Image 1 (cartoon, helix red, strand yellow):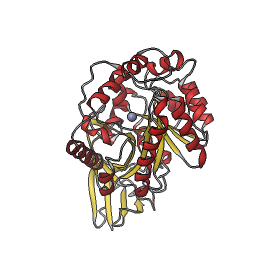
Image 2 (cartoon, helix red, strand yellow; image 1 turned 90 degrees about the vertical axis):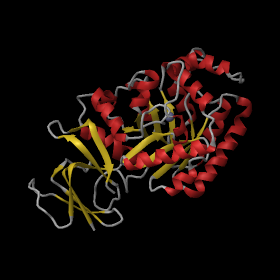
Image 3 (cartoon, protein in one colour; image 1 turned 90 degrees about the horizontal axis):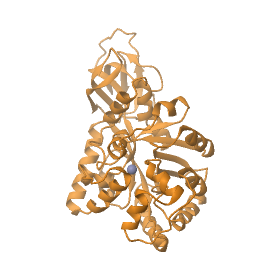
Image 4 (tube, protein in one colour; image 1 turned 30 degrees about the vertical axis):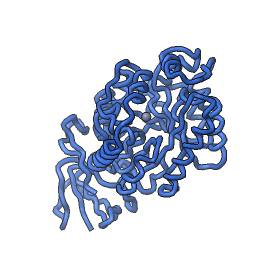
Length: 394
Ligand SMILES: [Zn+2]
């Protein structure tokens, strides 16, 4: 048995507990949460830490297989320039790709992440994931604007899906990349697959740029030029919007994670929230600032009762896989939002979106959420600072 005490415990399912102690068994299962009535009593075998203890973080959006693109050089601003840079610089040696994935998983683990919703285009992350203690939901991502190869693209995705399903039968999903990067033919095949059974989760990039709205509405703009330059056959869309695309092809029974939402209006998201049985908006603030120099109005989303979770996105567009760093960017950008709210986004909301909230997301008896210590905490304002460091305790 182990006991961890700190100035405050943030269980997430209730208010912070001053001088609280969390008791776990050797496997990390929470046995008891001890309130010491604000006066810390030395209880036998308690390790006391200066700082606050929170549940392990749920990274609701990442691309571990792009970890070798850390510090990616982007020539043109905006999403089209970013996609171009990723496409051009993605190739690397197997050794480099593999080492970068290994390092990235390690960094996520030590900085307090317990679960990762990871986008996969290949099985390159699989051997590293199998050796890791982290929970992974593997989203096998499909994209391709060339309608002539839609069947082939789906077939390739299905092979990767089966590969992951052998090891992660409950947490592998096929998913479309975005609202603008699939041919109608490919959308139709995916739609059929998603309609087959209940309980499917999709994670789609949504409303990340104005270019997305422009391309779908008029078939023009930076994304049109990007596709034109790639010399692939494609049919430019017209009279569409991101919401029209996803409600046309994603069955409303899927659990939908919409990633980014930087340029989506609250009204648009509220109507999608009514349409889908379950909807979570995943914010990747550092990536949004880097690619589009904008951040979604998370305060408005929260005030309207929309579910928000947090992801880091890949190391191609974020400086680290530290969830605390994303939390700090949000707190800094929205001073009126308190730490407890953002912590809920970074833990239980992501856990619910991935159906892992029975084990993760809150410090509650019977759960095994992982425990994370945040040091250098500002107790006056009850929030972390840029000097704060998150360390995994268990
Ligand atoms: Zn992404």
